[in-house]
Amino acid sequence: MIKQKLKQEVAQAAVMLWKKGLSIGRDAGDTSFRDPKDQLIYICPRPTEKLIIKNWGITKAEHIVVINPKGEVVDGGDILPTLEAPMHLSIYKARPEINAIVHTHPVWSTVFAITGKNIPLIDAEMDAFLGGEVVCAEYAEVGTEELGQNVVAALGTTKFAALIRNHGAVCIGTDFDNAFNTSNFLEKSAQTVVFGTLMGGVIAHDKLEYTPKRFRNA
Ligand SMILES: [Zn+2]
Image (cartoon, rainbow, N blue to C red; front, side):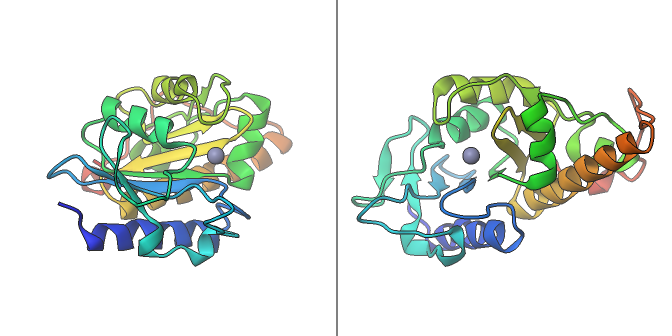
């Protein structure tokens, strides 16, 4: 069953991308949500000449497309799903416990994505909210199945964020609140590691346990 409330949530998350500066124009980045009841995926549209969306700041529920796990449109009329739908589908298939994806093009994380570097584990927040070190996925072309597989490999079974090489980042969670929380900590981690490196180098760890587990994403 198509749920208007979920279309609104995905549209609001897209607007949030714009407001937070995680998508600086056009259709950079996107958001989606999987209904745990019937596995249908509510996802950002693909802007076209017919559907002009100058930035995600104007996204409305009526723009949101609903697809099934095979990627077939089940609700959306002439509107196509975002070009990055294959990546969203691959992540949902690999991580059944998560239901929200926020794909971002943020400045500080992209510094790592364009240099092909992982963000090392430097504080307990990264352990709690990102799942430890953030891995930079192998390069693949935008919108391809290969890109989805490379991102799935970078996320593994326990991480909540990954860098997309020469492109951006992806954050996942049980809901949008968790996915955006992850995104906030991802940008903070990237920024602090850049400055720490300029100050002579960061002290990276293999493990930095975060005690209050109730704050974890999933
Ligand atoms: Zn992108």
